Length: 336
Image (cartoon, rainbow, N blue to C red):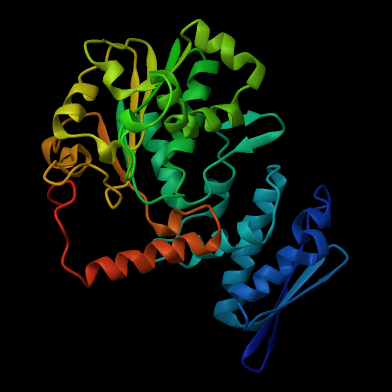
């Protein structure tokens, strides 16, 4: 229920919280959600009394805040917890040049595991997840912290649990920043396992840890260096190539041609963090040009706006991008 009351250049707008939704679910602990709304729209006063929220301020801003609260009500009603971070992301979506409905993004459940639900948190992440659903091969390209690998892993586990595939194959090229695996101590397995640890960590978030050894022993889940993929055809599998910026063009071709019937591939990487020796062209940097026009292949570009780590991570990424744009670029991994 809404009422507009003109007051000079301001209007008043009242929203009634549905009876079946606890008001605290919208307000957040210590009114955290409303304080975040006010922070996003400082010209609008937001007051909550009982089951009624009153907005007062310039008409255009009040209208936008009313839309925001309507979206937050829908998100809360779907069971998604609200906090300041959710509000900030919803504000960014509503005020972007291509506005998207926050409720459509923030209520898209991918996987529920161990009391938590994995969902896209930004418009870019939702586009990425949707592309994985619609295409056989999807490239997720973007900076650290944008959820490229994590969301791909969630889609893989979802596909396995839904019996859309029979196994998950996770792989990375054995190249790491400033290090050579051959100089690390231990056996081959001991050298490789720490490098593949981020894939194991994501898997542990989504699958009962006690079941992982059994899944790996049976071959239902395989985590291996990219070199182990050569000569294989992977049928009925969800295959993820992580850190793909560290593949050569030959390695990228080798990986993509492992695709078998009934399989889905996701390739993730950050073209700004290539660790290949000088003069080696990054397969991820040129693959879009090579596959341009090939059907059933999608390229998704994530940006600092899709970072879901600490707020500073997005700012750091933008600062490095600005710095790199102002200086001559060395040849690190081939043409840009």
